[in-house]
Image (cartoon, rainbow, N blue to C red; front, side, top):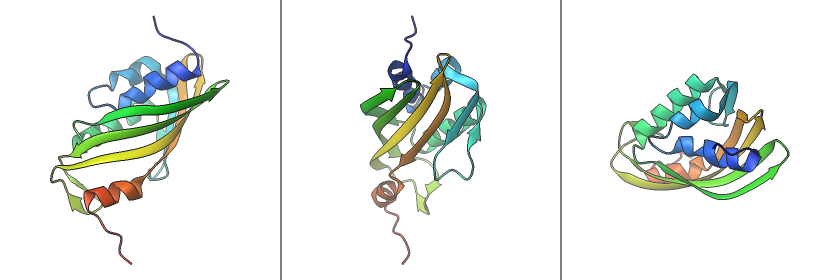
Length: 140
């Protein structure tokens, strides 16, 4: 039986970031889901757009796994501190070609939940740490 409440729904929904777990989006996303991170050119609208972006992420990191470090919830919102690990195996990111670089990246995501579904996901990712682990160096 699916769990209800902000904490368990957030813990379940963030599992979509794990490689091979995109079906979580079908189970828990609201039809009007919005997903926004500062490094996105614009917010993603709808579950299909989110799943497409997850597919692109999993192309770069086919073994990506996410671990929840902490969840703080109040009412219909939950904030999740997380870390993901993976191996950069395909494509180019930040001007760096994939060469099997292992990464561990942290971030914080806030979920807005209503009627047992995730309405909104907004977060921040340590992309500077990711760049350094991939071997990208900022020009200065």
